[in-house]
Image (cartoon, rainbow, N blue to C red):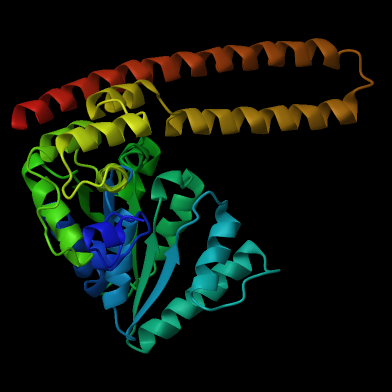
Length: 358
């Protein structure tokens, strides 16, 4: 282990979320301020987005660590749930036993709890991490829950945190009622090149490094070339560089060692990583909804066929419907292709603006 070699008391670039190692950049500071505002002001929802590995989950943990007993919080980190499972998860977080209850009973249980806590003067907060994985139906349940209010203020505070796809989901026409209730939307940008040295020095200092200049200035552009400004990628690369430095018995981390670490990780430059990712287009909310509709229609057809399969005239009817479903499926593929081209164009424009800004 390289800790003794470099005089460290802890791993400076560990991946496990630790609020003690959270570097509060300008963007993180603003996001945290918006979270605090949402907790203590009963107005609308807060939506926080950020790329993978930018520190969203750690920021949530920092918020939770600072709340007192007057705040009742439900934290949802598993979001690939249906409506009933989601309601059950919320109730469990609030300390209730929601199992073996029907949906209407779950809603009644939750509404009763919210009103009781409000009467006691509590601030009630629902925080959902990885909210980009929520279905439209679950988002509708959240909207209904958050609609519980007095004449002057809302009872439930909602903070949704997720990847940029969350914005695409919320901007869907079917989400108009939800988006009108959003008070604030903020995107946590990645670290700028000039913030990289501050980030590394902060992490080293927190880990007890006797020399915060352990990484020579020449390493900074190399680190930024491979990791961009994404904290998680910076941590992985810097940790690997420390391991390489220890293996070669070097007192300082040089640009050559960072290059060796990137090679060992088999990493391309960050710009190539972004290019590859933006060409991989995930299904959008519209695609998901249409696929769901197709599945429901197919199940209905199977039920009808089972009940009326003896009727000869049903065969041509089912064949015709099957042809229609295939046509819808082809349309879905065209929609996905067109969305991919649109996202490529937007991502290219965004990347150009970032380069110009840098």
